[in-house]
Length: 100
Image 1 (cartoon, rainbow, N blue to C red):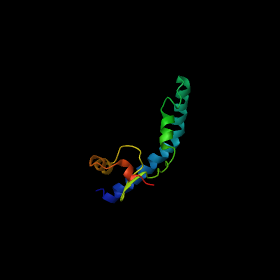
Image 2 (cartoon, one colour):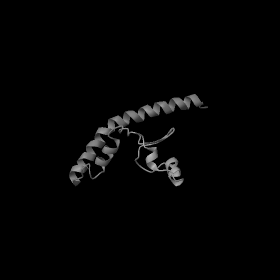
Image 3 (tube, rainbow, N blue to C red):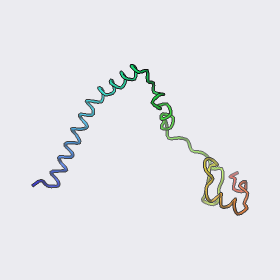
Image 4 (cartoon, one colour):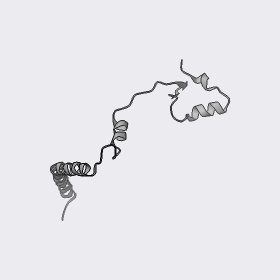
């Protein structure tokens, strides 16, 4: 009878084998992709790689807080937060929450 520990060892062994195979096959796959891209005139821009690079190109920069109400803050970018929308609906002026 196979035990739980035996199965875990088999999983670990198979995972290592799969990773080794992946490493050996990856260069062939990349060469095949490059060859097909050249044959069909496909560029990275055609694949959307330029847009993906911009989005994942860095950690992004922090934007300074523009509006504050106690511990609630908003940079002024994107959708208006609920706390500010509620305050405006109650008659408050957005400029009264500006951080100076």
